[in-house]
Amino acid sequence: MLDALTIVKLVAGFALLFLGGEILVRGSVSLARRLRVSPFLISATVIAFGTSAPELVVSLKAAFDNSMGIALGNIVGSNIANLFLILGMSALITPIIVNRNAVLRDGLVLAGASLLLTLFVALGEITRWQGAIMFVLLGTVIVYSYWSERRQISPSGKHYLREEAEVQDLPHSIVVALMFILAGLAGVAFGAHILVEASVVVARSIGMSEAVIGLTVVAVGSSLPELATSIVAAYRKHSGVALGNIVGSSVFNILGILGLVAVIYPISVPEEIAVLDIWIMLGVTALVLMPIFAGWRISRLLGTVFVLLYAVFIAVRIVGFIEP
Image (cartoon, rainbow, N blue to C red; front, side):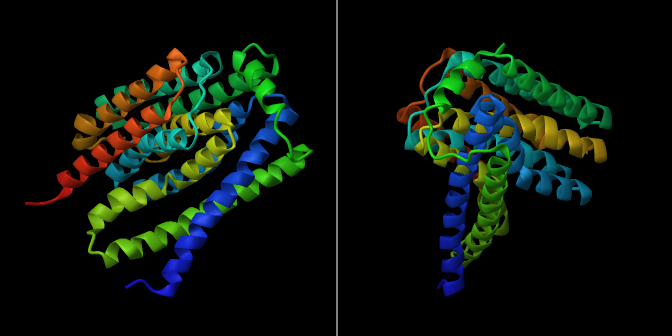
């Protein structure tokens, strides 16, 4: 039977997640207006970096403990969750309107980063030099994205500047917008932390094993900031923020987090990830990017398909961990 403290943590965790997500969305849209760039760019950089903090902590700690499978598997698993679970659930709230020209650049970056990671994994080790290459690529992408949108070379600047001009009740300065973003990030991070703690207690109370808890509760828990932010953005009809957070977090997971971890601790690739999980991630990335590149709307039906496919993936991996 659950105690009162666990129930309070569950309720408070969910409340903080979505309150933080609401504040975060308002801050990001306002900052985009002040800097005259798209909310998509702010979400794919500032917000994505902040919401990916749990993955950074998990992967660095795992690498420090010489648990390279966890360090790499956390990134691969988080990207699968981002693209199937989070995008799917966001579309269930409100269908995501995709402007092909607006997201083409960032979608191509995600495709390239995923292919590069697959190549490095196939080589059997992610070395310090390879990590440095990924980190430099991330910096180059950020600088070019900002430069191109400021000059409206990129179509995304034109599209989303029109979109966010319709938004009301936003912070009226860069400083206040940044304060909103920091407060929102703190809310989703702390909310995710206490929600995962309470969820582990619930999982143990119903007899779930440590392996299953780690694969489900903890793995999804590290993606809760992205989930809360994208769902709130979808509910508020900010498709640029929702999609930008998902794509940007996935890029940052590969080029930023894995790049940094590899620079500090070269990563030996476990056979299981090289044979199975990296190819699943690559397939998921391709499957999600196809409708985005085609400019299709991510409908509720497609969102349902993505969520169900993620459930199948989790079920298969859980079965794989069950010992006869």
